[in-house]
Each structure stands twice: as C-alpha cells, then as structure tokens.
Length: 393
Image (cartoon, rainbow, N blue to C red; front, side, top):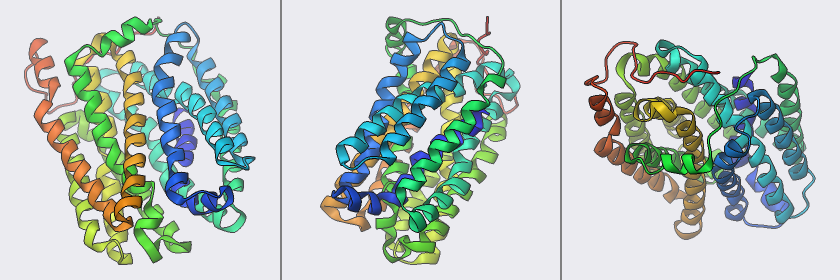
C-alpha cells in the first residue's frame, strides 16, 4: 500500500512534463512558466513536511497517510477545474501539503518496521512505487492527455489517490515519539546530517532539470507516440536501478552505490548534449539516465540512518524536504536555461549539476566519520548496517 501511494504521487510528479504544452496553452502562459508548477509544488512540500510532522507527532501514522491522500485528491480536483494559472498554482500547493503528509510517513514506516538486514530493501520497495509510476503511469497519463486532454489526466490521478486511501486502514497501527520543531531544527545543526541533506538536493536537481522540460529537449522526438516511448524508457531504467539498489546498498554500502549512480547520471546527461535531437540515441541515453538515477535516493536514506541513528525519523523527514528542494531547484534552473540558452542547453546544465553533486558526495562522506565514532570502521561489504532502527512504542 505504501508503494501504491508513492506510485500515485510519482505519476503526478512526472507526468506534468508531458502535459506542459497543453497546460500552457489553456492557461495562456509560456511553457517555462507552466514548468514552474513543479517548483511551486516542490517548495510547498519541502517547507510543509517538517511542519506537518511536528504538529501531528502524536497521531497514528494511518491518519496521516489517509488524510494526506485525501488532501492530495482535493488539490488534484482543484487543478483539474482550474481556468487560470493562479488557481492551478493554488491546487498544486494543496496537493503538495497532502503529498508531504503521506510520503514522508511512508518512508519512515518502511525504515522503522524493517530489520537491520532488510532496511535497504524495505526503503527500495517504497521507492519502487515512484519508479513504477514512470513506467506505467507517466506514459499512460501522457497518452490520456494527448487523446482527451490534461484535465482528464488529473482527474484520473485523483481517482487513483482515492482508491489508495481506501486501503490505509489495513496497515498496522503505528505511532512514533513526537518531536518538537526545536528538536527538528536542532538536527540541522549536525554537520553530518547537513552534508547528506545537501547531497540529496544536489543529486535530485539534475533529474528535474531534464525531466521537467523533456519534450522541449527532444524536439520532434518529444511529441506524440515518440514522447510516450521515451518516457517509458526513462521509467524502465528507473525500475532497473531501483530493482538493483536495495541489494547493492545492503551488500556494497550506500556511498559507493551513490557515487556510481550520480556519476552515471553526469556521464549520460553529458552524452545527451550532442545526441538529444536523434531519436534512437536519445532513447538509449534517457534509459541510462533513469537507471543510474534509480541508484541515488535509497543510498541517501540509508546514509541518514548511519549518521543520525538516534533521530533517524526526523532526518528522513528532512530528507524528503531536501528531495523536493532539489526538484524545485532543478525545475527552476531548467526553466531559466530554456529561456536563456534554449532547449539544447538543458542536458548540459543537467550534466554539470550532476558532476557537482558527484564531487560534493565524494568530498564529504560524513558516514565514514560517524562509523569511526561508533567503533565500526569501514562500511561492511555484507548485509549488516550500522544504524539500528528505532522501535515503535
């Protein structure tokens, strides 16, 4: 059920890029302006997630999961009915608050309920919902948009959210110890946590530079059935990466897997610069970017369990905010790049950001110091991890 929820949110997050031309036309704005709907959603999520977590600390997690989906549904309905950019933006804000309530709790529950040996796979299972959305949901959504319009796509997402919410009561009752905003902000004073969160922002941003404006980047290959196939290739790559990442993190360690992932994204984004206008090479490169990108999120979550095992739930919630800050940064930079340098410069901007992310991760690696402080030495090449999952009361 947790993966089903992230599937629905993933469809909403990624299908928007394929719908931007229609949204821009109907709302009488430019494509780059319409693309800022992703920025609005992402900033709202990033700011709302820690506030929601603080105000609802004593609540049963099922209430937050179900309530979050209900609020997300309301926001999607508002967007589907929107006749102006302002109304559409307001709907994105409401949907983002609901998404923040659901998604951060989905990852926290997965991490807490899993054993030490299976935590990487548990987190990857929830992330799989997002990966699967790019394979099934996003291409299907773009097809619906081409046939019946973008509003029908948003109504479909709202219906899927309603169906997922019905399954929430089947989850086990779960509470986590409440945490004050002061404590949450106190976590941000830890250099190791800040380093990992900064890496999350840097790792996520390149993906949204590219995906937010993919139809424009692909030119003639970014329309009709060809766009659907490219989006399908991206999703299949992400599913492959996500399928591998859990076992890789548990066996090889989070940091090496993360470096391979972000390094691969930088390389294949760079290769997309000369190849973006040729359909078959672009298709293969988008698949590769998706596959290596699928290796990046789970290691970040795992690293937080290592550097902050005593406040892992708080750190994971902040990581969710960092993911959406990265998305906001990427969408904003992609829009600026499109306006200033044109669509052909977007892959280069994504590659440059990914290279910066690689250097940032390689230069910091705070988990090495955390493990040394815990007397554990280097990260093992077996299934044991350093962080002990917090217990549910």
